[in-house]
Length: 488
Image (cartoon, rainbow, N blue to C red; front, side, top):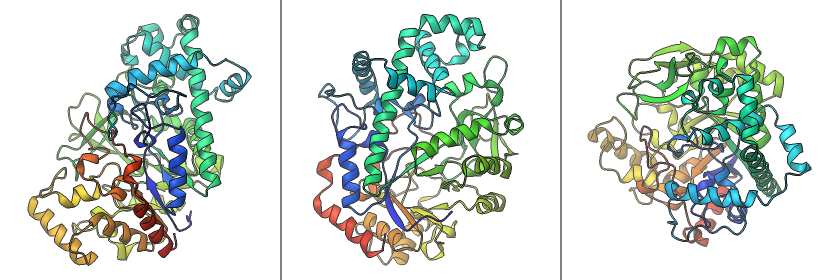
């Protein structure tokens, strides 16, 4: 479907300023919405909002339906006062905020509003609350290592644990009620200012999640819950050994047999939160890289046919036309593009990738209107980090190839290399592509130390934060002038 001509910003809520060491849905988020409007930006893109698990990654969540409690604004909570302003120190933030949140939630009544919320979310919330309470009771270990009876969801064992864990389960119900109440208040603030929220729906879910524990038959698992096969991608731009993600792969035949009910519920939940949805790793719906469950790298995998058109027909029939952006980066085949075009989903282009001579579709003079263009994404280096790097950095290319890339970029963009973040921002905004999204790091001209994620790195990701002092009035005015000039 066509999107109106607009520009927006990519920023995860954890990256917002504010007290407590991590961004949340409180006053600073509402102030940010106003700043977006002042800058002429009409889309706010966020990463997945679920409760993070392994590596603090929003792409490895304990639930595809629940909200991350770290994003809840706890009134009066200011942290320890020692948290750094420019980065989230997850190791320090998580225990401190969890304790403050639990203490606050215990003061809130379990009233009719909470009960109504729990009833409305009955498809996922009871399983999630029990899963998280069980995980805590088992010392935080992954569910395949739990006691056999509860791991295998024996009804008597589940009921015994529900009674035993009644107090923490009730607290989780209140936690999720507050999360969605605060989020919807923020969404309403966006809509009042003409700003659309764009969310991210990953193709896969985490192995250690309520989704897999509660629905093991929908995934390719051994009887003990361990992985038969796992998700990843073959060797690529980022890694000579590919990327091994560790997510379980779906049993697509079983999902097809029940009419894709789980996926319909998941997409319905996403559309309830967001005006637009970026569907991550779209190519995996046409064919996906299957790696043995015990493989050390993603090299020895194989391509397997995905669900294809029947899944999207089922989603459209149940939910209507879908405002989906298909993340079609990486090794994209004609079959993947045919599937995307069949349903009219705009694809993506990354301007940082336009100058290496390998993927000319990213070059602006070949853009189409129904395209979502980024200077870079959460998986890229920042634009200034990319430009200032003297070598191949995180890619598999040689230093000579990088030098040729930069020479072509200067020639193509008519630039001497000064302020390349603004050169790339202007090039995207001036293009015919209807939708442009810019990471906050590029607006601020920050280097590689502000990067959000380095694919394949096991720790040190997702911590970027900005401060209000960085958003000088002249920067806001510059953005507003550009968005106005190029009718966005």
